[in-house]
Length: 372
Image (cartoon, rainbow, N blue to C red; front, side, top):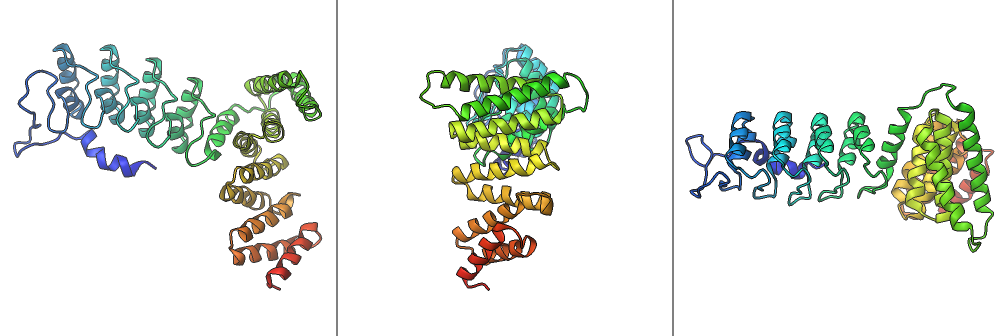
């Protein structure tokens, strides 16, 4: 994902830079332990390039500043984190290096370690106070890199460290929701532990939502009721040890954000989390349809197409929502001017679900489009 940038600086970050034909680093004539070469590298950075732990320690003992930056704003800690030098990271932390220093590209040692999949170093940096929510130049956080790499051990580590799951990456909400669902889904067990209490809590949450829908927003206790619903929903999610409790709670949260707050991005995130966790169940198709509606309200037709298509691809004739999903796919294609694709989907709908009300609508559309 970020290789267009990292490829351009990988050699700079990982290899000793040669200034002449002798094979030795080219230092400038400025004296002192923190003297930099023509690329801004100090002796400490070059020692890290060589994985020379002894030289790293010697440089620090001689007074090297661990927070010096190179020409791109990278520090020794960032070098070590990117290269996976765990012992050197420990040494730098002990020397008081700033674990939250930010490069010219907005990257921290934690982001670089997460991007490279250096889980042990991420753990060290978090323990030393690294901020998991720093955003780099393209808006990505360490958690986003972990999820993109499908490194759930790392994602769980960042999640437990308090990484903010509500942050929205530039590409959309889908994989943040996927991360949230994946992290929670890993704890699902079909045990009877607290099952009765959970079932009651989920039932009560549904009643709370229904009460909210029936309230006038101008009522004095409306905002308190909204706050109570969110707190109670998050409490259920925190103790959910079975699949149903988690799916239903995420779904109710999605309905709340959609119908009460009109917060389409959050609603979409909750619905997708429910859909992923409930994959293979009727709740998944319901959640996907609502996620698609949220995306459309957020003016993201491409994402809505993905959700509607997933209903048909995952559930086919088994989902009551499939005819509507196909109709909406064709409708979006039509609105985008792709009449050929729209006609294909309308025809598929009419063929596969001839008795559906949407089949009649599809036939009318085909006649209007001159495709019959």
